[in-house]
Image (cartoon, rainbow, N blue to C red; front, side, top):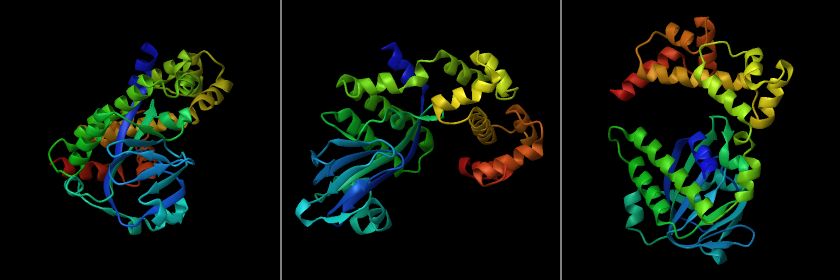
Length: 308
């Protein structure tokens, strides 16, 4: 249990989007794929997935790990239009019509809710994607479907603290998903063999050192000393376990911290740059704009307007 608690503590979760849909036209996509982890809650109607076209019952949830392909059929199989994923994405509005959660609750037509979220270990490894598990049905889990419904209600309001609520409830969603996997002993072999980043304490030491020393020297020479490997090997070692080289990861962490400081403090851009490890303010500003598409100052003004 301690191992799985470590997993949960290390996974950073971010809500991406939530949508409600009414079926306009029956369809089947032979290679359906979502680029983010996606949960589909079936309110009314018929939904099947996989080569065997396993049936989802009303009130149940289908989990689609990011980038995992599956055959997806929504509606009456006898009336369906056959599509590939590209064709469906290009003409999605012909098949699924957006509507409010309230309308879904009052509708007897085929309706679904879809929630997409990001779950990354130490902000770098796509957790569910890295496990290489297939799409699967979550049955008999009223708690999960209730959290999904609460999220969809929050998506449609404009109350203070909305972003915090979305994040908190998405974290609950992921915990419920992991609890379901463990309770039903699903994919335990994948959890134990594919999550290599939890088994190597040197990598965890690196993540923790980077997190607490963003403003300091994070050269490969320093990282090699932390991980107790050679300077020539540390980059290969880090990338082998995470899929990203350490300096790219460090820059991402520095910029994300800079964004948070822009949102929550009145520190100057120069001071923020220094705090996250950039002695040259001009270089910090160039890299910031390259990564986010807007200057640091403009992002601060935009955030100020949002938070008024």
